[in-house]
Image (cartoon, rainbow, N blue to C red):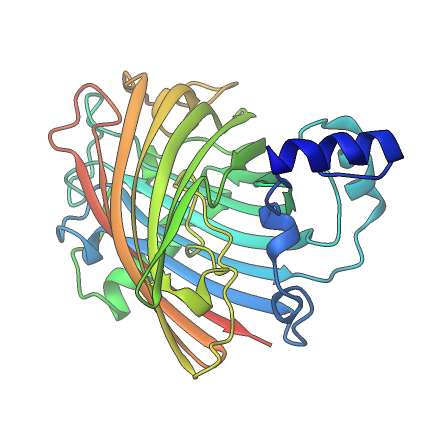
Length: 346
C-alpha cells in the first residue's frame, strides 16, 4: 500500500520513477578497462595440429600448421569499413580486433608408403593459404569474418613439407604417392561466425564457468559448409575474459585472445561439440576445373574436443584432443588428432 501511494504521488507531481528493473549490463559493457586497453595489445600464435599428437596414425587429415598475428587496437583498413556496411551481422566498435594468418593443411590416404593411387581412399592433397579476419563484440555476442585465399596442388608444397618432417623430425616412413595429388588450383573462402560467449555463465568459488553456443557458414571453392556447436569453459574468475585457443579451420571457434594474469599464472579447461553440414570440400571432391582423384564425402561431420591452456605472464600454451567423425564413405575409422598452440602477447 505504501509503495502504491508513493507511485501515485510521483505520477501526480511528474517526478521520474523506475517503471521496471534496470537491464543488466551487456558483455560488451562489462569488459573492464584493463582488458580493453592493455598496453600489450598484439598476440602472435603458432598452432600445430597432427595425428601424431592423437592416435599416432599418419593418414587422412595428417597435419595442419597456422601462424596467426592479432592486433587488438589495429588501425583498420578501408576494406574493413566496407565489410561493416555490406554485412549487417557485423559491427565495428572499440572491441574490434584484426588478425592475419598463414597456414598449410596436408591430407593423405591411409598407406603413405604405396606409390600406386587408391581410388577408394582419400586423395593426396595440400592447401597453402593466407587469411585476414576481424572479430568484434557487440552487446552479448561476437561476430567474426574471415577472407582466405590460397592454392591446392603441388604449389601448396605438401610433398616437400611432409618429406622434410618425416626425414628430419619424426623419423617416419617416406611418403611415396604425392605424384597423384590434386592439380594446382587457386581458391578462396569467406567465413562468418557468431558466438554468444557468456550465454550461460556463473561463479563457483574463485572460478568461472561459461557455455558458448555458436553458428556460422563458410563459402568458397575450397570448402563450403555450415556449422553450429558449443564450447564449455572453466577458468579462474579473474581470467574470465580470455577466449579458447586458435585452431586450424575447420574447427570450433577460438580467437586465442587471453589476459596477462594478475598473479603471473592462469589456466583454462575447455571442451565442446560441433556439427558441420558439408556441401563441398575440394580435398575430397577433387579439383573444380581439372580431372583428379576424389571420394564420396559424408554430408555431415562432427567434432568432439577437450583441452587445456596454461598462461605464464605473457605466454600461453595449450593442448587439445579432437575426435572427428568419418569425412568420406570409404574412410576406415574416425580421426583422432591433437592441437598444440603457443601464444606470446606483446
